[in-house]
Image 1: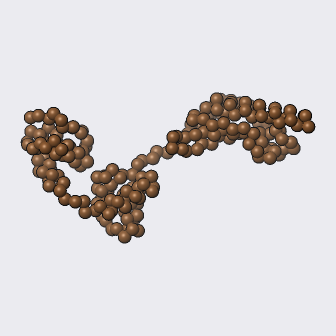
Image 2: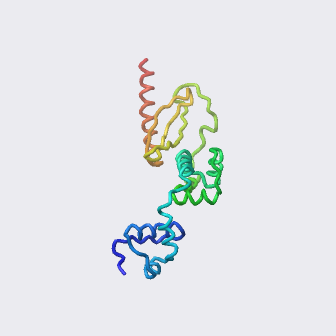
Image 3: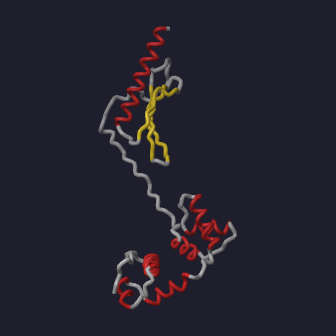
Length: 206
């Protein structure tokens, strides 16, 4: 019994068996009893797979529509929603058939877990609330407000830290970074202080 060159895939379920059958077939081996015991499959299942290999997929149009659906929805639709999508396209299939096709062509929905946010305790830093929700101002640079938001890009998440002047809602300074850290905020504050000093110097000169 020679298994040299056969790539063994230890996957459970029909998908795992299909890949095992495919690898055996690609090596041109005859699947005897010992082979079946080694891979944990049946001979009838293997030869049934070989027989079905020559048959063209009868749901090619549905597979194409499912693929387009998953691309448009970033692979978030499960088979039930895909079934509704196909019905709107005039294709009616049993939901179990749709699930089988999605599993066969790797079109199953991706599980997107909720983003976990870390809440910073208010006990870490305690400072007096000088603003006290009084956002009115009489001159520039009297009161600033800060905020951090994030922008999703193809390369990852980009964090944007900015400081806004409440006098005219203008952006005093902003900095970007790939991580939401204290250093990002400090760089923004330093840039705002530097810019604010320049503005005050220009106003004094006038």
